[in-house]
Picture (tube, rainbow, N blue to C red):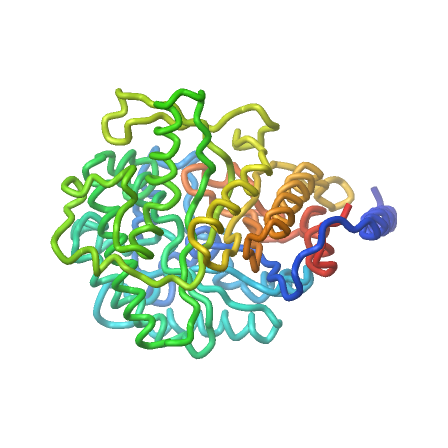
Length: 465
């Protein structure tokens, strides 16, 4: 196709997309925060620049056989150097919130002690650029990239981690608290504990359920300690967390499966919320001795969270299983709905279910901190990425979310995962979740059709055709 033909094709394509905006569906509350989420290791690259030290994910990806295709996050989306381009995309798509994370090894190369000013300065520049674009910075302190030097000292199963993390949290809050008003302490603590220490498919690659239980309790201690340190520095900040949640549906109507579903809900969805808000672990799953619980820990795990972030991707069907010695149940992703490229079931009702239950149980403001899907659609000959399945995915989930809000759920924001195609942990670059297509060799970005649709949704504050 000649250049002029390509431009004409793009023009016709854009006109056709714009025409769809006229059909407005469910609307959202005034001031609703439309945004996207990213994570430091998944997009930044620059893995050993400007004083940054090795993280557990640097070590893990550089270990042969751990990541599909031998991929690493050494360069990723190169957002450390191209963040202004990424923020310009967010502004173009009418986003008002950016959920990003801080790389702990950029701030404290030794894990503790001396601060790397170049690392702090990078995030100050990043936040200032967001603010100049009219975008709220929502800062996640920990999205899994632990300094390797702290893993060498035992990592999350070591109770000293709570104090080390609290010190790090205080440094970041002091440096950014004049700019950032919304913080998440952790992203998906269940995942970095269970997948990193319990089954070993994520960094640091330890498969020991005893280590998982200890790591999970220490993460709860760290959440409470960090909350108090942050609150002392920034008393007006809104401090919460982002938790992966899956509605737990019993596989059958048997009493055993119904009890197993509640146990899975306790272990997966609220294991890091209930201790913060009540000082106690959920009764359905509380192996205190195995977790290394000590007198006084009830007070330390408390954190009066201001908001709850929900990361939703799929529901789970749960059945009792006595062969699962630690958990006592088996949970599987159903395959009744359509499947994404990653094999995850598309089930918008699950978002409604988990949002309404969270609202009913905890009575706190909610943000959808992640929701998205992987499809591999490449750019066509006209240079556009036609990814209708992703648009359909978002349309279905946003319609379900609007219904939850109409039914009383106090949801104030939604962050698509993700702004960019990026490094997807054990899957490397084989999965594309982005609203923006990324050429991982050149770094070139192309906003996908789904991204342009999402931008019109944000502008209209309503689901559109």
